[in-house]
Length: 283
Image (cartoon, rainbow, N blue to C red; front, side, top):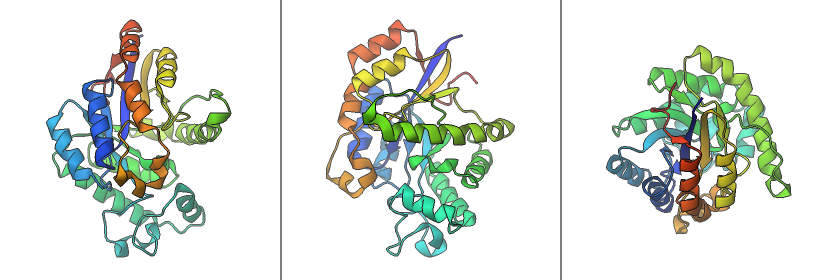
């Protein structure tokens, strides 16, 4: 059985430095796919770049925390703070969700608006995922599956990364890895019944924002036969990113170096890994 890799760059549209890094990692490196963030400050710039690079596969990075919503705040009051912005952190959103304050009807309206915003730009949407993986929450996940079927989007991300101890420096990432794997396994049957595609494996959760050259070489060397999505976050740091505190800690320039590394590209060839997107992966 052959080994395939979907190398997906998240946060396309968050800011111009990230957009530039993603396109560079695609043109000069191994990135095959990117997730468009319709709520990002540089969404229009990302759309222009997407049309210039039609071979870059695209999904939608559904966003329920951090930044501004697409819909007016008065239409989605359970999703926003007093300043009309989305809830600032995943923990704030989870607290609202756990206490029944999040209205699923408002989630559906906002996410529908985000998908429509991308589709209206003439973009072929290959898959859906989300900022901070909030699409995996029960209730919200079912809404995302409905959106995928309605818009004939064939793919959805299930971050079911296997647990491997990566040391004390990755403890937070490892804990997140376990929780998201459990949620993904819980939803896998729903994905199959909806006839949606998701890769066999996912890598990059524990190293999220920290996928250095060494980490990427280890990841590629550990791939098994089948289809693996490798989640990455390349980019250039600039002043615009200061408005997005959840993303400031990411080592985006180091990820960009890793994704365009000659050693990494040589290893892909040596291991005969076929780089694909959600649309071109053998289903």
